[in-house]
Length: 301
Image (cartoon, rainbow, N blue to C red):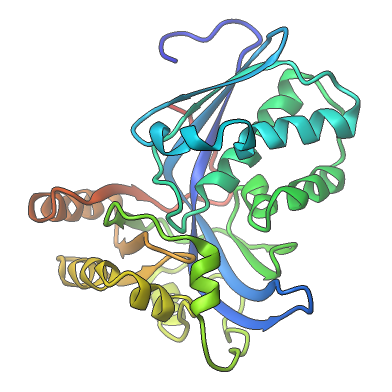
């Protein structure tokens, strides 16, 4: 969807979610793993547009739209719309358009971010009076990452994703997201994880100084990186390439992979690094951007 939006049409950005660190600290009897993670959001994003309609429809656009075609009626955006309608007694009527720029099954919460964007857009479109707690509970029913994506703010996340402590501003760092254009199922990575559980990270808050944040992150890790790399050795190549590019302060895998991120002093440095990486690895998905500030609202494309 391009051009000027019609009156009453809502457009919401669905930013990529990054696990700056991810420790697996336990597992519940029902099999869900318990996490300790510092989550941030990137300026790289999908876009969800909601318009009035006499029925509920979803149109998929963008470079990764084809990867979602198989989901059909099970698409998480449609599930979010139906769940919100049922919870509020609102007829499920809206024309939804998702521009899918983030790769699917890639460890950056694309589906969860899209579902959260759908909830935000439809609350506005349908003019619903929903409490934040009620919306958060509904979000959790859709997936463990949906509640934090609903906030869209840097947070320390625990439990299975339901314990969210919002943090202050992160430093204005540039970043490059890189995926080898290979999907990796979250459940498969968790199943492959072995060994003892980790302790919670010894990081208080989120330092707003770049050097302090990088130093703190170096004391942490992503516990899913080892099993993901064993399942998909291409992650090794991505991390090595990111770590060697000029100006990279830290290279790490996000979530269950296979997307990795590199942090840079500023967005200009990230764009230079992305251009260099793209020249060397033309088949990879490479997207430069920045960490979003605490109160920053993206203007959806």
